[in-house]
Structures are given as structure tokens and as C-alpha cells.
Image (cartoon, rainbow, N blue to C red):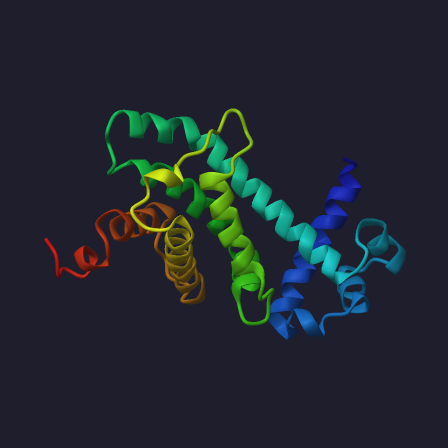
Length: 203
């Protein structure tokens, strides 16, 4: 892709996040975007149909890059599973996920916030479902098989995804300084051992 196009799209994306933080997605206009990014309307429409198309494309890029992170770390995760080392299995991939979220902290916070896209949480849950059950990538076979579940898979995924998204929101909104490694450890402790263990009620 032409370097000028890359820079233009990055500028539009950064301005888009700024405006969401300032006035909320619904109040943003194309004029707001072009004025702040110092481009003309023709340049904007050369890349996006409208602000909704801009939001969808930003979210699609986010999900694709997150998917690439998972695929890259998939061999290490499978090696942990095969070596019967459950303590490190989720940690391996969670570190890379939290590292990516930290690199895209403003975008993630804006999309998950009250001024962002109210459907973004649903899209993330669908992403989790696809990552675990509906992989079409030959190098990333299905990780979890529904027939092994002790509870309906839909409820399990909703429980885990909602809990993880809630932790991510808390981390982003409170501007805490835990590293991706520390957040991976926190999530792993609660996921592997359960909430009763995490609160000290169960040894």
C-alpha cells in the first residue's frame, strides 16, 4: 500500500479515537473527521463510505490482528497442552493478547466505553467463539470440542467472555499500571482455579 495512504488512514483513525473520547461516536460527523485530520471530504470518501464504515473497518482490522496474534502463539500453546502443563497453557496466549490490547489501548478503551460502539462487546464474544470452536485455518485446528463440555458450550463461552471483557474494561478504565504479564497471571488464576480460589475461599 502507498505510504501516503497508510499515513492518511492512520491520521483518520487517530482523529476518530480522539473524537470518540471527546464527544462520542453518535455525535461525530464526517466534517469533524476531515477538519481535524486536515484532509478534504474526497480523501475521506476514497477510503470509507461514512463514519459507520470507518468504525467497522477499524474493528475488523483490530480483530484480524488479534487473530494473527493467537495463530502465531498457537504452536506454543498446543505444546503446553501436550506436555500436560495447564498452568502455562492460557498464560502463553494471554500475554500476547494483553500486550496487543496495551498497544491499542486508546482504541480498545474507546470502543468498549459508553461513547463507543455498544455492539463491540458482542463482536468480541463472537470472536472468542470462533477462535475456540469455528476455526477454518488448517494451522489452527479447533482448540476445544463441545462434546467434552459438562455444561452447554454457549453458556460457558458467554460466562468466560463476559468475565474477561469486564476485567479488560476495568484495567483500561482505571488506567492501572499492571503489565500484560501481570494481567495474564490475574486472568489465568481466576480462569483455571475459579473465583472462590482467587478470593481465598478455596485452597
